[in-house]
Amino acid sequence: MSVHKKEIKKVTTNVLQEMKRAGERISMLTAYDFTMAKIVDDAGIDVILVGDSASNVMAGHETTLPITLDQMIYHASSVVRAVNRALIVVDLPFGSYQGNSKEALYSSIKIMKESGAHAVKLEGGKEVKESVERILTAGIPVMGHLGLTPQSIYKFGTYNVRAKEEEEAKRLIADAKVLEEAGCFALVLEKIPAKLAEQVAKELEIPVIGIGAGGGVDGQVLVFHDMVGLNNEFHPRFLRRYLNLYDDIKGAIGKYIKDVKSKDFPNANEQY
Ligand code: KIV
Image (tube, rainbow, N blue to C red; front, side, top):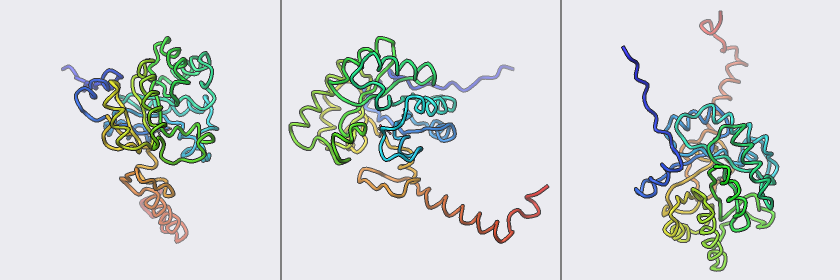
C-alpha cells in the first residue's frame, strides 16, 4: 500500500503575482516564533512577515530601531522551522541596508543563508533603489515598504497618517514606480489614505499589501499581537481585533494563581 502525502502548494512570489491578476486578495500576518508561526501557517495565511515590529512586541522597545540583524535572524529561523506553506519575508533591520547597497546585499545574504527565509523587506523609495537592485543580483526577492516607515520615526516625529498632502502623495506614487522598476515583487503601504493606496495598486503590476491603507489594495497585513488582542494598549482605527487574548490570558493566570493559593491545584488526578 502506498502512502500519499497531501501535496502542499507553497506560496511563492509568482503565486502572489497570479493572485493579483486573478483579483484574489493576499493575506499576510507577522510572526516571530515557532509556536505562533505554526498556528498562522496551519490557518492558511499566504505570507508571514518576520517584521522588525519584533523590536516592539517581542523585546519591548519603543521603536523598531534597536533590533539587530542577528536578532532578526533568530526570529526568522524559528519561524522557518514551523512553516510549510506560507512565503516568509524578513525585514532588513534599521542600519543593515540604508545608504550602502553593498551592506544591503551582505545583510540580505546573511538573512537568507542563516534563517532559510524566502525574501527580504526594506523601507524607503528612490533612496533604496540601488540596494534593491543589488540584492536582486543575488536572486533574493525584495518587498518594498512606503508610507509610514517606522524606521524613519525620528524624521517624521509621529506615527500619524502619511501622504495626506498632494506633494507627498505624488512622491509616494513616484517611489512606488521606482521600486517596481527596480524589481520589487510586492509593496507594503502603511497608514496612507485609502484612495491613494487604491490608485497605487491600480497603477502597479506587482501586488500592493496595505496596513491602514483601506480595502482597495491587493492584500492586507496586520501585526499578529494586535490582531489577536495580546496588546491592549494599541487601538488605531485600522486595526480589527479578532480576539481579546490579553484579557483571556490574564483571566486564566488569575484563576491559576487562585487555584495554587487555595491548594485546589494540583488535585488527586493531577499527580503521580
Ligand atoms: O514590522 C512590521 O511588522 C511591518 C508591518 C507593520 C508591515 O513592517
